[in-house]
Image 1 (cartoon, rainbow, N blue to C red):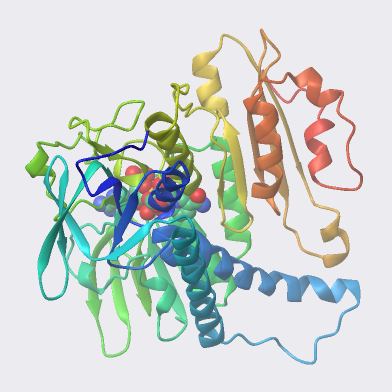
Image 2: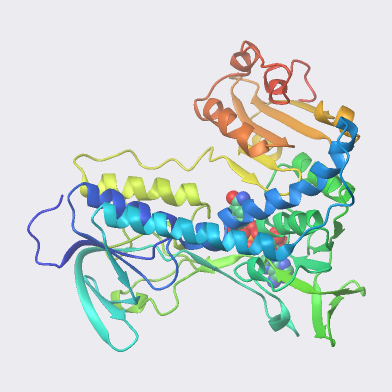
Length: 460
Ligand code: NDP
């Protein structure tokens, strides 16, 4: 609770990303005196170099298919469609500036003091502000570390030629030939984006099949669909070295092949953004994954220092950081003790083309956890593609615990999978049974109705 304090602020937040901004605003609405320190852009990774620009670029890439699909519906385009990268990039920059302004107004409107500086911990209640000309200090009863993550690139000869996911949005020109290293969210999303924008696209992944940890059938289906759309997938290989030539890069792979491309994106994961944060000043240590451990109340080993979002263990997802922020404010600035945040059944989407939406357990995880499971799956050509002539297919899948009939996993690969799975996630989260899905009337004609009409058991 806010009250008379010996400190300048009740809460000082370091980092104005999704989690930090939400925590600052919500704490301020309880009457707490709050400041937020940021030396880069407001909104953090998600708004500036993550979810938002990625989704805009993904929309741009989808037009490629839409132009092709339109002919079967009678639309004649005046000529072959052409794409202008600088229009997309510059419109994206304007939109993000608009969002930065909204973030600023939201913070100011909530009464949060915005401090433009780089911050580091000095002690358990003191933060040093590094501004251009001088350093100063500020004190707070609680300090929240919300500095997020930063892209990480492994070292190999020529790795300095690779761009990271912060840089790829603002390339000078659109690459004719694009290569991405990695098999996670960012790699498959950008492979789909540049493929859709017309680049010859290569994805290099060191394992058997990308999207490790996702449902196996989802991974295989996505692989087939991305290949069908023209992405060149190279599995079981890695980059050995990159050599720069006059106007391109020669990328030598460990399987002996060489690819000549214009841009190499390394999408090889992110690390907690803790450089220069002064964790040693308050005795904080990282766990084995390089993150800051916290308890249910988001307190670090130094109780006045809190942390949330990508700097802590757990899924690196904006809605998770936001949920953590809400929970942190409930725990520290309101009466009562909220239940610990539940990290199970967090839905997620991968905006590759076609999109993946998923919630709950994969088939493989369910087999491990339950004695018997039932799997219902369907794989069809969406109605839209009868006339469009596209061969794109959609996968939908429910995983059920046989003993209780509870749906423990729902997966989709296809148009708007994220939109559809968000709704299904409520049912899975609520622990509804397959019987409840079956007695729900479908909406016709949609693809989503398949989630309530899958009656035939695929396998046990
Ligand atoms: P991920 O951790 O998802 O994937 C990293 C990939 O890089 C993995 O395929 C990994 O391989 C591979 N890799 C790691 N080290 C090396 C190496 N030394 N050489 C070659 N390959 C390597 O990270 P991303 O960068 O894709 O994304 C970061 C996080 O951001 C995601 O995990 C996700 O939480 C979040 N995100 C969410 C999005 C969404 O919600 N749609 C979109 C984008 C990001 P291996 O599998 O073998 O370990």
